[in-house]
Length: 100
Image (tube, rainbow, N blue to C red):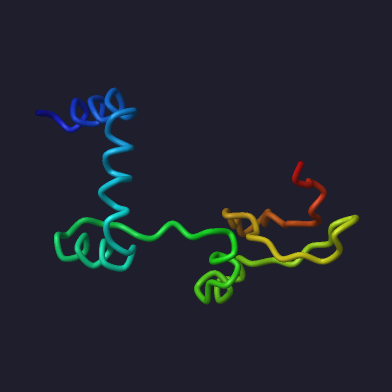
């Protein structure tokens, strides 16, 4: 079966596949699954929560965590722009959006 056919079939079966995988992955801690997947040669990584991302040494070292001013919440940390261009760098200026 060609890769594009396998990918299409996964998408078509997503409603069935995702709950099955979620149930399986709940049977062991994330660290165990990551170790198993690494041993099997499957590239994988933990999806971090926003809080975990803000505490990430890697992101801090890369300057990806920025502090911005929110009009009502004051100073707050957030993950900055993911793309960095030499001539026209992206910049997080403020945090105007609020949760509803």
